[in-house]
Length: 68
Image 1: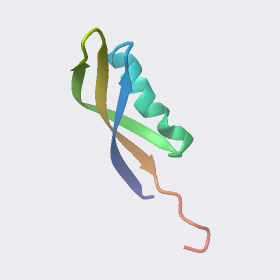
Image 2: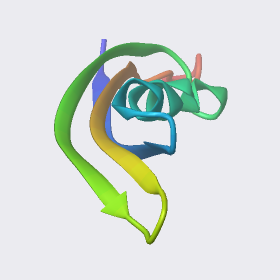
Image 3: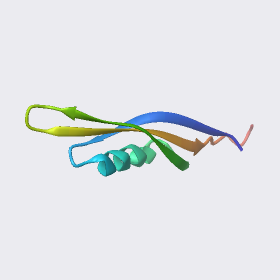
Image 4: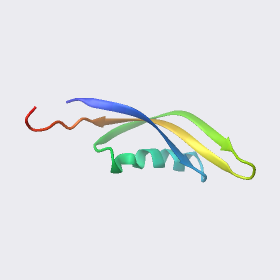
């Protein structure tokens, strides 16, 4: 079995929990997500609004073709 990880940043104006969920919901394009590790959390401050950003490391199984 082989696993791979990528770093991805989720964002949300609602808060850090939503930013993390948005990053993890990337499973629409990344299959077999097995774990996630929270990294840096930042907040972008715009005049009247905040935009929460969560850096998440996602680990997933690598699917190999049946011929390998």
